[in-house]
Image (cartoon, rainbow, N blue to C red):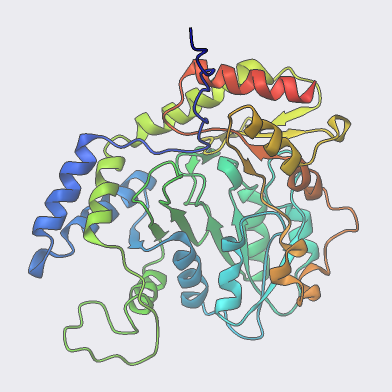
Length: 381
């Protein structure tokens, strides 16, 4: 008999959306009907659903969360000469828009458990040039928004919530995206809900929202039909087909978030007792939507995040590295002043150096999570 090659299980993907026939039906309807007078109907419906879910007055659908952060800064009057404080450990999209408006980023340390902004570090980094603070709800964790709100109010600062990764998380019973003056969400293909690409900006401030609406449509007043632009601005809008996908996703938002929490629960059951391995935090006053299941091993295991990723891939498991410290990236090499408030040994360095995101997509089942955890524990041992 001819020997058969061994059966190699497919690589477990690190992320993946939940797409049903409903998404396809609505996307087709939008493609066929969202033209002429009704061209914005799907967007308006999506925005109303999203604002209603959060309990906020205003939402605008956008191409991505980066555009939401750009608009938040621009509409908030942040510009050249200003400084904006944000976390040293996050995806670059959280802080890149600071440069778009001509302001200067200021990186500060994160807390070792939630991986979110350290309020004490924020307070210490405020200067006469500080105009805004960007708090990032990393991997579904939540910033200490009570402390950040107090700091922003005392110093007269714009408080921006980057909730791109935290849809469905709550802080003291309040939804992620409702804790700052304005907030940004992402609907990238890996996110809790997806429109392929896409984002949303939300606020309860009508004056700020009016400014956002004008800036996202080339500097013309909302409803203008005569192309009478009175300033140079941006083009940040979402297509109707994307909005249709968002509607279908929002129709089962509670189910999707429950599924994310279920997936994390499977990991927690297998990994929470492992000495020297930290998982996503959920303090008593927080409900974490667990966008990405994240594992941070101690230095005792002798692995950085890239070595751990390589070992997981050999076992047929894809992963993502924990976000790097922005101050260490070549993109900010010519801006050493951005790191001037960071300590010599930032607490965020540990997670940034060793952490990985484990498979967290909706296609996972408990048996696959068991396979991932078995492989991870074998590598660490």
